[in-house]
Length: 184
Length: 139
Image 1 (cartoon, each protein chain N blue to C red):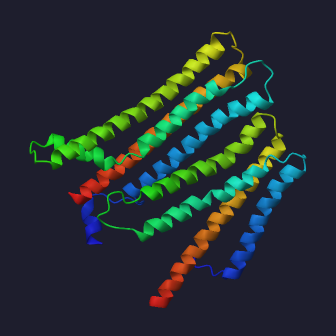
Image 2 (image 1 turned 90 degrees about the horizontal axis):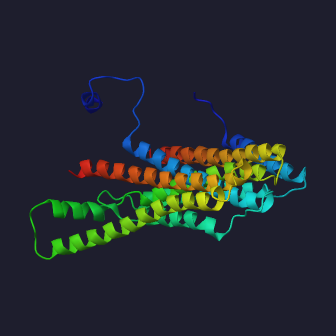
Image 3 (image 1 turned 30 degrees about the vertical axis):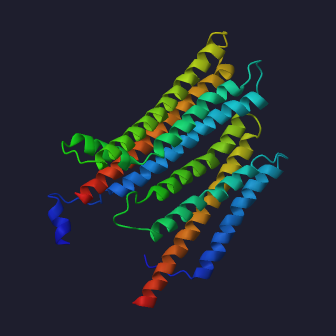
């Protein structure tokens, strides 16, 4: 109890959410964003199959940006964050030990390359969906809403997936800082 | 708030609640002769599974010095958020694509939410009662 009171000067009638709780909420939120993106895209697909009055249909070309963003999300979030951190620490500190340091830095390089591929896939998915919207819909003068909605849903869905990946990344890095302060 | 409710009453009322959810979803299909909303039941039944699986496994290897303490739990909660939102989004998307009517959409969303909440409340009740029993056992 004394420790609790020493920690802050002010007392609040409510508890501040803990770091782990915020992190958990962020992870839930990113799952929700991913589902929203997925269903926005799937809405375009089902709409094109069942309720489409125009002669534009969703084909495999529209699926490519979505697949790119999904693979990017998987790659970015399956990287072990400690590898990146380890590499940054070993290259940041001036002490170079024999053998172990070169191994660390090579692993960190691999992690950075994979991370770059992941983010490139994410950005490629988002820009690819915009390209599909412009080339397939806007250039051919499909400007009225129910038709152009298929392209816009694609862009919005990919945007939501990128946003979900960013939220998940931030949540995991937040946890890292927390455990970092614990270990230091 | 020390309301004493016997576990049997909890089970009976929750099962009634769950049956109400199933009734709503099945009615939303059968009234309109359109069985697309049945997928909603499947999604909402799948939704609590990842959280229960991964939180258990996290308890087992709760290690202070482990590198990634709750990656599995993260994955579980990510999947939970994804599935719960999918369950709500599925009837809305079907409604937008004119596969089902507005009435059917609302009924299947309500029924799905009732099913999901009754499952969550069930695990919540009996998780806490198990803890109490353990307390009574060891205390």
